[in-house]
Image (tube, rainbow, N blue to C red; front, side, top):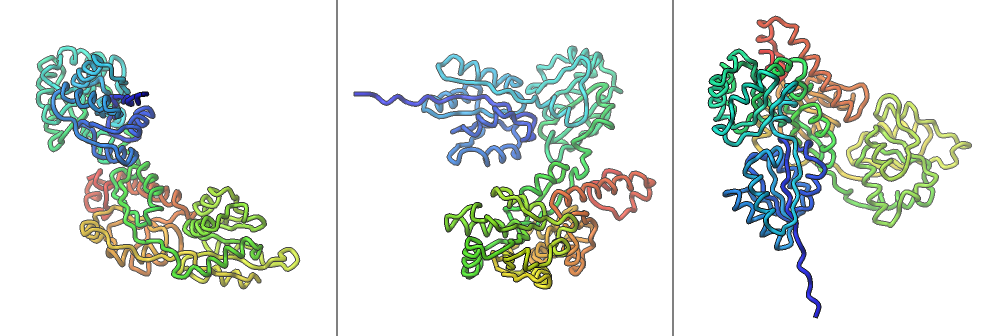
Length: 526
């Protein structure tokens, strides 16, 4: 009789870095995605845990680390012996914690397979995000027990270079007293950073004498930087000086479309809040789309014009239902309004023949669309798959140019459910610094389900039609990019924020206080 060999699990001690999920190493990501059980320390930010959970296996178990190092090691060893892959996720670097070192020692005494995945140290990583270099002789440590610190050695490090310590906010006074007692000059520059590498990271600069008072209100883990490098923050601070840093930006888009915009906003430092205002649903009767797909296959159309990503998706879903693919577009030319729509077509292996070089709108497309010529265009029909609420501008313009148009409802846009009460209150009371509208329907539906944004909220729109609708609803349009695309819209908002900052910086202090400009940009100068 052959015995089935029991699978052997693995143990990984994984460094989460200083908090920004983007700083997870590839090896750390792979270990977490493959994990059956993840034990995490209290120092790991919830924002990072949320990202890890979203990418982990559906059946992965997440539990906080509890007890002494020996207790945590027993849980990891038990999981491995049961054939599971277990991860202990810790802030910073695993070997930056004495308790984790003891866990590794305990696991090493067994036959369990284990690895230690390095992470960016919390102190060193946050110092870089705060714009504080650690030149010369440098000391960076993630401190668990302040009473065990060698303040004489730390004072020597400050004298010869720079120092960065990750400590609990409640231990700042003890660190100050230790540094002063060890002979550190009380006027030496100090930076204290809270929520390091997070969306709300904030750094206050002062001196050894005064940094405890300057950091009043900070909680949890903070990073203390001491030495000459603190004085270079004005020029080197990059994370907190991004154009939209700290801006709360409302993103009223469908769930499927909001991700790309939110990612771009985060890259500029904004805190996006996605509020779906539109839900996309199939047409009530599928007969039109069925005939349109058959017409495409039979060569009925010379052109297909896509006005949105949703239209592209609707046609390809219908193709998939019938077992068709991109080859069945042979001989049909494709026009797209906007690069996002064109990218959606390219994703299916087809290169569009026409994308307006100028205005990304129906008018822009019509300006470049050739009139029908019976000799050059033996097939004179155009397929226009669109939303049920689309305007007639494009279809009418094509007809004027001699084309026959099949204006087909490919999908319906319906108003989404209202957002939670706290978001509705924030919209109406000015809790958002900016709102980005990508279509007229997002304007109408946001106002319909949540109310009109407050007058102090910066309104950014993707194009002229959206601007017209916003104006009709009594909104002041502050930002409109030269080209109608999501990247250009976010870029235009970032440029607007920079302009606000420069204007406020040029104002006398008294005028700044009386300025009507709102948001984080204004508050930094008050």
